[in-house]
Image (cartoon, rainbow, N blue to C red; front, side):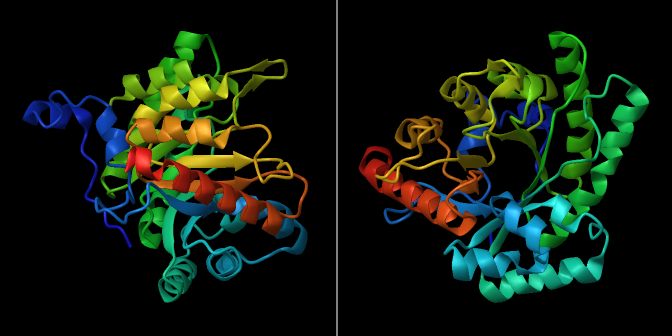
Length: 315
């Protein structure tokens, strides 16, 4: 399982000269869990987001403790990304987290991150509510540390004008990032609706935060800003990749040839690789049909096929 040193504040690194000439591309090039630099290393590894199974989990009441086994034995994936709603009351349960970690260790499954929702707006216009949202995430930082994850995934929800939301979201993320750094953890933001689905806006937030342990999780498909407004997904991912510490391969529908019909995976993964990213790319199947396990399988096969096609170009 990958180990991480405590992330350093970008200002500290600048003072030592460690970032001189490197810029923010460093955040992508040293993505957590990046493949080792040798000839046989894959361009990227594949993980499984728990949200891919949300329909069956919600319908059947499946136990989150079984997720690593499902990922490894049923889906053929050995790295997982949790969703906090499936163990929402267990963030401080050391025995539960210990059992989940033991199962991962027994299966040789890597825990990468926890996707956190429902903990308040990190860019809330009310400073007190913003601080409360920051503190609400502390338990998930600690849970992620317990599980051996490298990050928690959060949302950058806010309200106000474009510029006000940059300032407010950056403030909340900076405070959370400071706490996460004390635990050697990263905070990553997904494009997840509202202005966070505007790549230029979220990139501006990242620059405003200015911490190496606060980055992005570009999602191939979440670029709906409002009911009648979408952002170009390829432009958005390109804008977010310099800050990426994880990547989400959203899939919704496949054609008869096994290609995702809403996203050109070859084009998208070229954007990812050109940015220097060599970490995990997470399967996030969200379509209504086929069934979840088949959607996961098709996404994994597509990622593998594109990875093979790009190997010589980016090796």
